[in-house]
Image 1 (cartoon, rainbow, N blue to C red):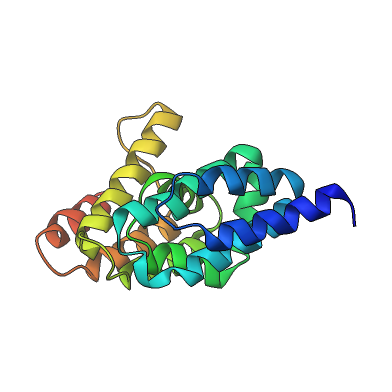
Image 2: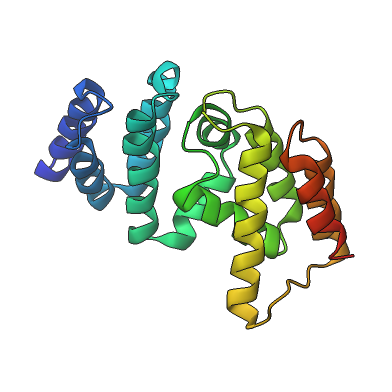
Length: 196
């Protein structure tokens, strides 16, 4: 076994013993990703799963979801997105269990899916977000955040004042807006309908 392999296993064990709110966990993941990106991604899924009961805590969720996801994207955006989207369990941990769902980098990934050609995958993720109870925001607040981000991102990229989404994108957003209970429902349904 090489020194690099020994260090890889030492890092895995160290991550396993580190408290999920400890800022040092990011550096451990970064070093592990530099040695073996795929293993680091697997350890990340394991860590989120191990601490699933504490992902409602914003500090913990931000530390082991938000910061670690940003780090992976910084190393390889395309590889991170592909590995994330191919992993239903990891998607569930992030979008259904983490209090950071539909914020930061995971919101950006969802917005890109909605505006890209991956509407079916975006629909799956929106269903996961709708199941998230580990947050101080309800589904209506999260959908408002998502729709605002979709509209703002589209307008920033196209230089237009009004988004021009295709029928599939519009119908998907409308379907989820109609599932909202509470104050944001009427506003969001109206905003999406205006795109038709």
